[in-house]
Image 1 (cartoon, rainbow, N blue to C red):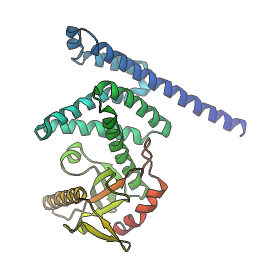
Image 2 (cartoon, rainbow, N blue to C red; image 1 turned 60 degrees about the vertical axis):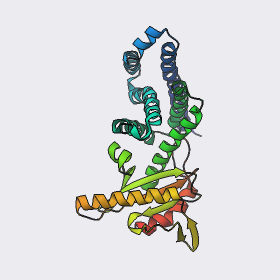
Image 3 (tube, rainbow, N blue to C red; image 1 turned 30 degrees about the horizontal axis):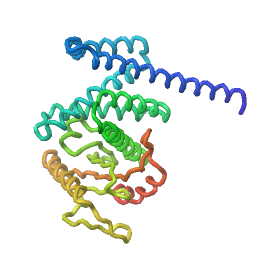
Image 4 (spheres, one colour; image 1 turned 135 degrees about the vertical axis):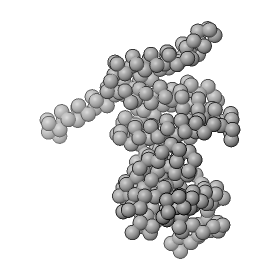
Length: 293
C-alpha cells in the first residue's frame, strides 16, 4: 500500500470511528431524556410528554451536529414509530387510516435514508435503532418487534436495489398507496410503470415473482422450470388483491396496468444494508427476463 492510499484509508477509518461515536452520543442523549421522563414524578412526566422536551432536544442536537440532522430526526422518530405500532395493535381494524399513513411515512423515511448509506453507517444506525426501540417499547416482545421492523425495511431496500440492478428504475410509492393499495414500490420498464408488492418472508424457499396478467388462480401449484412450486394461501390472497387493485387502476386510467408481486425468502438480502446476495440475483434473473424482455 503506497503512502497516498494509506492516507485515504486512514481518513476513511477515522470518519467511520467518528460517526460511530456520534451515533452513540445521539442515542444516549435520547435515552437519557427518556429515562428522566419515565422515572420522573407523575406531574413532571405529564409535562414532559407534551413533546416540548423532545423537540428541545432535537433542536439542540441539530444545532450541535447539523450534518447529522436527518439521522437525529429519524432516531427521535423511533419513539413515534413505536407508538403508532402500539395503536394499531390495540385497535386492530378500528385503527384510523391516519395512523397507518403516518406509520408508513416513517418507514419510508428510514428506508430512503438507509438506501443512500454505506454498510458502516447502516450498522451504526441499526445499533442505535435497537437500543432506542427497546427502551421505548416497554414490551417483553420488543426483540421480535424490532426484528419485524428491521426485516420489513431491509426487504423493501433489498427489492429496491434488486430492481435497480436489473435496470427497472424503482420508485417509492405514496404512503397512501403503500398502506391501502398493495403498492410498496413502482418499477419502470420502458413506457410501463408497474405497481409492485413486496413480501420478505419465510413462506418461500426461492423467490416467487409474478405479474398480474399472468396470475390465474385459484391454483395453488404452478410449473416453473419443469418443477412444481406450491404457493401458500397467504401469497395467493396477496397476489389476488394486487390483481384486483391493478384492475381498478386500469379502469380509472383507461389502460392496462400490470402489477408485480415479489416474495423473497429470508437471507435474500444483507440484514444490515439490504444489499441483495449474489445467489438471490442469480435465482431471480431468469424470472425477471421472463416478464421484462
